[in-house]
Image 1 (cartoon, rainbow, N blue to C red):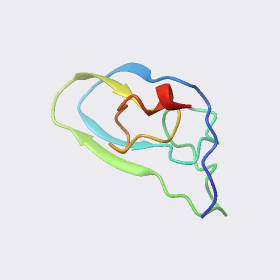
Image 2: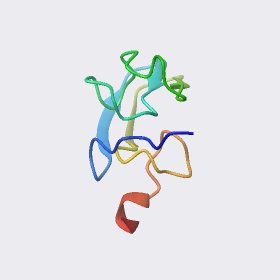
Image 3: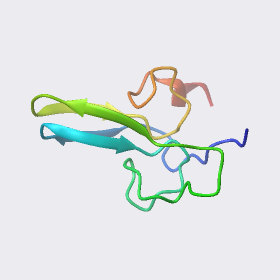
Image 4: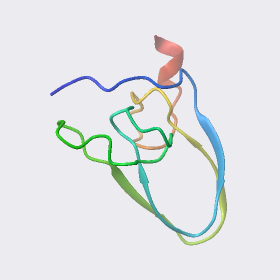
Amino acid sequence: MSEAQCPQNGPYGVEIEAGTYFWCSCGRSDNQPFCDGSHKGSDFTPVKFELKQTESLWLCGCKRSGKGYLCDGSHNNS
């Protein structure tokens, strides 16, 4: 499998309304941290997540988090 690009060496702090979202796992999206379809033709697929209410989240920007779309501080290890 290919290695994801690292668009940002830190998390994206976002406030997101209730709904369904797709987090970019490849790092190629121009709409970071969300998927814009740039992964097509690669080994990557976006990560779907759903929120039942508005939440403030730290979404992974380095694409190395062990918690999927949520930042776990892995960017501090590079």
